[in-house]
Image (cartoon, rainbow, N blue to C red; front, side, top):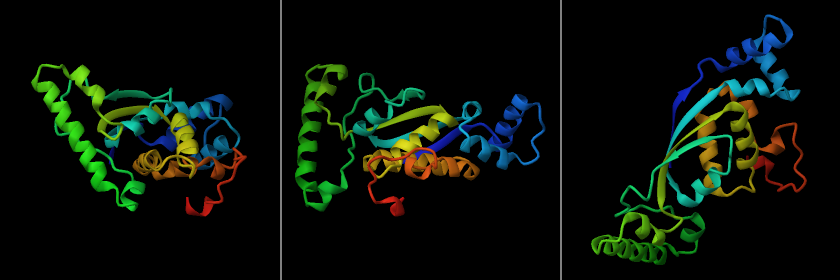
Length: 206
């Protein structure tokens, strides 16, 4: 998995503070303090002015299917219809490796790959041959979102109850952005605003 921040609003803290100041006709003396105040008090609309674009490579299709459920993001994904997936790579869950199942897993993937290439050779188009491809198949995409949506993603996907792959993905996205924003980009149990009704007991591991 590789996550790269390709575009971002420069100087996000000062940008947020400047935009927020119009609401109160004020001049922000302490931009970071103001942003923390806005966050704590739920004045999050100003965070929508901060934008990010990420290039995401090497995640599974299973992970991308979870990711696109975040409806306030924009996505552009590598097409399995127009692109050939011959020689495709896969993501193998650690649980499979832990039980020693990676060899059987690899054998199944190899057979799928053989069938896919055989289908192409007899004239079956990529758009139909792709039906055999597994959720483990690697994909790449661009994702654009504003800070408010990234906060929501972090609240939901950094939770220890989220699946490991999307949790790792969102953590990498957080590490890519300005470190002054990290205090907002946390699992919901650490947000100070959202109560988890079913605690996992793993808050110390986050």
